[in-house]
Structures are given as C-alpha cells and as structure tokens.
Image (cartoon, rainbow over the protein chains, first blue to last red):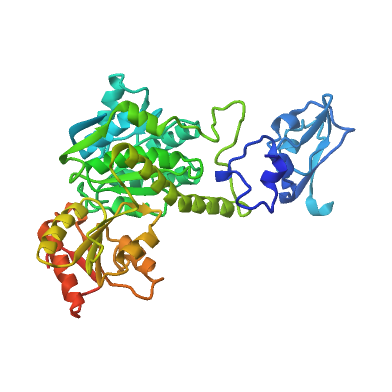
Amino acid sequence: MTTKKIIAPDAKWQEIPMAGIIPTAGTAKEFKTGDWRTRKPIHSEEKCINCLRCWVYCPDSSILVKDGKVTGIDYDHCKGCGICAKVCPDKVKAITMINQSEE
Amino acid sequence: MKIRHSLTGNEAMAEAMRQINPDVVAAYPITPQTEIVQLFSNSVADGKVNTEFVTVESEHSAMSATIGASAAGARAMTATSANGLAYMWEVVYIAASMRLPIVMPVVNRALSGPINIHCDHSDTMGARDSGWIQIYSENSQEAYDNLIQAIRIAEHKDIQLPVMVCMDGFIISHGMEIIEAEDDETVRKFIGVRKPQYSLLNKDEPVTMGPLDLQDFYFEHKKQQAEAMKNSAQVILDVAKEWKEMTGRSYDMLDEYCMEDAEIAIVAIGSAAGTAKVAVDALRAKGVKAGLVKVRVFRPFPKEEIAKALAKTKAVAIMDRAESFADFGGPLFRDIRASLYEYDLRPKTVSYVYGLGGRDVTLDTINQVYADLERLVKGEQIPMLNHLGVRE
C-alpha cells in the first residue's frame, strides 16, 4: 500500500489499514503541520557558524542541513517553538523569532 | 480421542488454556478467577506449555502486557473477574480498537459495592460496548468448548477482535461436573498457529501501531471495528459448525429449548438457563407450553435470531443478572425489546433482574416467573420491571 493511499484525506474506511496502523515509514512528510505555527524562526546564513545546535535540539527535524551547513528551515513542519533560537549561542544569535503575522 | 474429566469450571478453562498453549499469559489474581491462572501457571512450571507467563502488579498491567504481546504477534491471553475487569477498563477498549485477538476468560462476579465475590453479570455487562465479542457459558463443558472456539473467532482475518468467554462465578467456576475434552493434538490442529497480519516484531515490514488518530480518521477506524463485529456473527457460526463436526457438540448464537410451540418463554444467560430447562421439563409434563432461550453470544447481539425465536410466543420474561440502574430493566431486556420493535406481531415482554451478588436461583424462583407469564397471558397485569427474589 502506498503512503499516498493510506493518508489520502478522502480515503474510505475500506481502503485504510485497520486500527490506525501505519504500515510504512516517514508518512509525517506528507502532512504539512507547519500551519499550527504562530511564531516563525528566521535563519541568517551570514551570522550562522554552523555549530548545528539547532539541528540537534529541533523536536521536529525542521532544520535543513546540507554538507554540514544549515541551509534553512522546513516551514512545512516547523511549529515555531523557538528552541532553535534559544540554543543558538549568545555570541551568534543567527536565528530570530518573528510573529508569523509580521511576515 | 475424547477424554472424560470431572472438572470445575475453572479447571476446565485452565485445561483448555493448557491445550491452547498461548505464547504469552499475563495475569493478576482475583476471586473467583484466580484458580484459572494459578492452575495454568502449574502447567508453565511443569513445562507442559511453552508460554511466557508474566506476573504483573495489577489487572491494568495484565491487559497492557497482553496487548503488547498480541501486538508483537503472539497469541496472548489473560483472565479476570469483576473489579479486576473494572480496573483494566481503559485498556480493555484499547485491545479492541487495536484489533488484537486476545482471548480472556471472565468469571462473572458482582461488582462492588457493597463488596461481594459471588456471581452476577454486572462486570461483563458493563463491558458490552467495549468492542469485545462476548460469549457466555452455561456450564463447564461450554466454558471449555467456548474458550477453544474463541481463539479461532478472534484470530479470523476478517475479525481480529478480542473475545471474552464468560462463566458464572462459583456456581460454575467452583462446581464440579463431568466434561468431555478433546485430546491435545486435536485442539492444536483446530486452533492452528496465529498468523498476524501486522506484527511489531516483523523487522522486514515495520509498522506503527496505536498512533494518534484525530477527527479525520478515527471515525473510519470505528466503522471498521463495527463492521468486524457485524461480520463476526457468521464466523462464530462457521467455527461452531467445524467444532461440531469434530466433537459432536453443537453451538449457535442462541440455544432454543422447547421453543417450537412455546407460548411463554424465559430468556436467560449463563447457569440460570440450566435451572430453567429443568423447570420447562416439569411445566411441559403438566401441559404448559413453556420454553427457554439461552443467549450464548451477547456481542454481537443476535437480534434477528432472538426475534425469530420469540416471534410466536405470547409473553416473554427476560432475565438479567445485572441491574443497569436505568429504571428500564437490564441490558438483555432492552436489547431484546429493541430487537422485537421491527416486528408487528410481538410478545409482551417483562424484565426480571435476578441473582445479584450470587443470590441463589432455584426451581422455585424460575417457576415463579413462568407463573407470572401465565397470568400475563390471561390478561392480568404484571409490572414491567421486577427484582426477582428480593425480600419485600
């Protein structure tokens, strides 16, 4: 069974696995849960020293990293908790939180 | 090969469990069920089964461990009574909604309070909406037969629901009777090996079980559960048919006794049905057209079968060994009344709540009910709700 079919919002009761069982991995990728967010982290590539503390602490795996460097934030899944901004070293402060409505 | 044993109900259940040889049993003692798992633990200690026996600290843990084992793909069992069932309440529902084919003997006992250890059905009747299939046994023989059949029903690929196999506390659990058992090989062949569709221990096909299920999917999963319960009726009959071919002992959703031409009838569940059969025989000898319907399967509710069985009667007494404090009779009474609503011609029905806290049900008790029904047929008034055998 494909991921798409399991999580299609219009899937009928006959089409989905019983009991809410999820028989494949990584289905969270299909759900854009970032719309819960009220505050938004803004990452500055200029200030960032790529210590990756934000990547370690992010509870939603929303810090995007390529070749050991932070490339941005996955806003489809970031909930705006602000942990990344908090753990960013005081002398760096490469992540600032803004109000989602300020965007 | 058949083996004749003289066994109590608890011994019969423990013997069936030994033959089932489940992968995991997690249990906590509670009267009057304790003996089942105590005797079964002897089988474990003596190396007669391969079961992993988990002694836990409560019934909530017993059911939780059983759920974990079943989700891992094991054939898992536990057993309980009354307050033990109440204590595992939360996870009883989770076992059903996770579609885990757990089979659990429940030795029926009154729920406290006031505290009482004797038989009534208040424990399992409370669990009637939990999503478990419920099969009730009249005697030790039925307890043995029902428990083995329950494995096949629960694990059927279209069902995958847990089953409670109920038996009256002390009256049956501690009363010795002759039962006819099958040999180990026959039982093992009948139940086969569990082949779970999903298993947490299957590393080749990893799955997530029991995730958060919100407004967008929970309802669809409940529909699946309802559909599985609906389909279980046919599976229960198919398994019974196969059991009969093998053992000669036949089972149905209901047991109809002298109902072909009955004008007055009692409907009951469990051991009281045995007493009622004796009363029916005596009444029949006197020319009274009395009959009895024993309900074996209460969930799913055999609505059509019961309406058909009662269709030609004039008056029916529905006996509940549980008070549901609705001021509208017990759960069996209300389900049967609702079943009859579809039919234009239907008998008069009266509710008798009886035997609470183990109050004895004698022939005199049952005869009193049939006498009331005869008066009702003659046009006399009988209260719709009665507490049978209470001092007043």
